[in-house]
Length: 197
Image 1 (cartoon, helix red, strand yellow):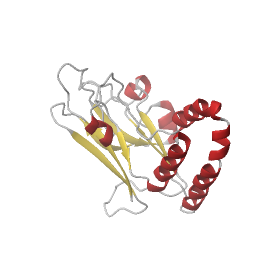
Image 2 (cartoon, rainbow, N blue to C red; image 1 turned 30 degrees about the vertical axis):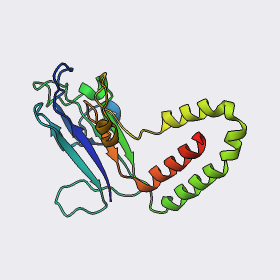
Image 3 (tube, rainbow, N blue to C red; image 1 turned 120 degrees about the horizontal axis):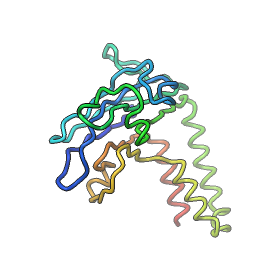
Image 4 (cartoon, rainbow, N blue to C red; image 1 turned 90 degrees about the vertical axis):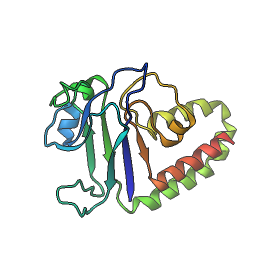
């Protein structure tokens, strides 16, 4: 099963204020309007003195009543309309979704897409020669790859210095996501290693 861990790191000395946040699953319209339409609370970040996290497991059937389930071929949306302050944690419109773009869309792929993704990775490997022959295009290709491939989704924006532990855990002083999507990462790793070499 694929999982995502959304970190709520504790406040550190000499850094920006802690952003109090509630994370909700919403409808597509709620996502587009930054509003809690058809919402279901996923988790809360409300303790600046503790490192905590919100874990999401992508599964079609849940053993827990009322838990989120993710159906192949469907899209799911998470947002936070909190303002970032303790007083604004229950805000129901706008908030950090609007000011800091604190929202994310998950597209759950059909099961037969695993084969298609592997075929795409193979085709990318075969296209290595074309990329090498046109090495002047490499910066544009990498920029397109970077613009379209969010491996880490940082929701709170801040100027942060990362240490090695932060980089390998995909965490920062704001919310961040770490992914366990094996086939996609395998394809991306293969593509990057062939482009760089």
